[in-house]
Amino acid sequence: MRGILSNSHDPAFNLATEEYLLKDYPSDCFMLYRNTLSIIVGKHQNAMAEINFRYALEHQIPVVRRLSGGGTVFHDTGNLNFCFIQSGKAGRLVDFRKFLMPVLELLHEMGLPVEYGGRNDLILEGKKISGNAEHIYHNRTLHHGTLLFSSDLGMLEQAIQVSPEKYRDKAVQSVRSKVTNIAPYLAEPLTIEAFGNYIFSGLARKFGIIAATSLDNNEREKIEQLAAAKYRSWEWNFGYSPAFDYQLNLKRGERSFQMRIGVNNGIIVQVETKAENNLENLIQPILLGKNFREDFILKTLTDQFPDCQVIE
Image (cartoon, rainbow, N blue to C red; front, side):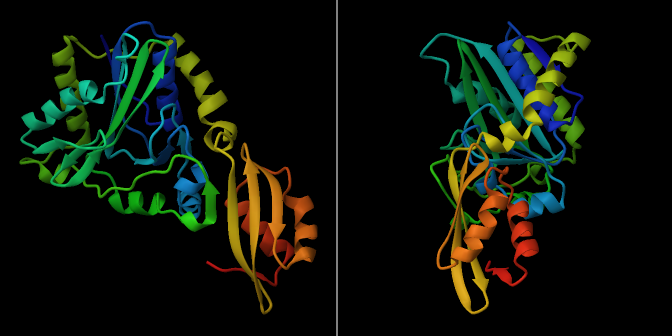
């Protein structure tokens, strides 16, 4: 098995690396990496419905869709991500416990009373420290998870705070859990870098790996191409979302009404208002066929109809 300790903090590059190792690298491997501020949504989720879009925009937090299903997670450099990729036999490819147990054992060796949770996660004193997901490609399994070590939990809470009443869809929705960091529970202070080295060394020992390897120039070139074409694209990160309706409560003068915007493949395909036919007829040509972005919708309403207020 190959062990890779990524020196990149670019979420698009690291997620592209996972896909490359799954589909184009023939051998088993594991990788550890950290990402800069980012929100990572599951493959089958409506990205807009899972994030606090205004907060993400204000703080320049990119949203990146991963290859696996499951819920939305917040990344920063205080969070350590681990990824296992292994070949197996049909019918035995999905096995969360198989991949999580080595990590759990290493945390126990640190004296942490971590438990295996009911949602294939890791729990520390009743709070979640690790969320996990898997993706199957032919006879290979991609298992990846998070380890909250010293993340900014305030930003985490704000970034994935959603307004469910605005969106109507059949997408997979995240199950929110109380979370905590590992660092405060350690007997002795430890940096995230030292923690990452400890986890890597422990996994290497368990799998008989002598030393970490780096991606070569040929691999990096292929991964960068994939990151640019897919993981940095609006089409994948937002357009891949299932069809949904976006609803706004508006007020114009003394009249309150609702606007419904239908979105398919990330494109606005329908605009309807109740009791405001004039506004509907005027705004439809502006919005129809455009990429859906909440800030674009709100700016268009403000610019075109100054007397129209959004009711939060």
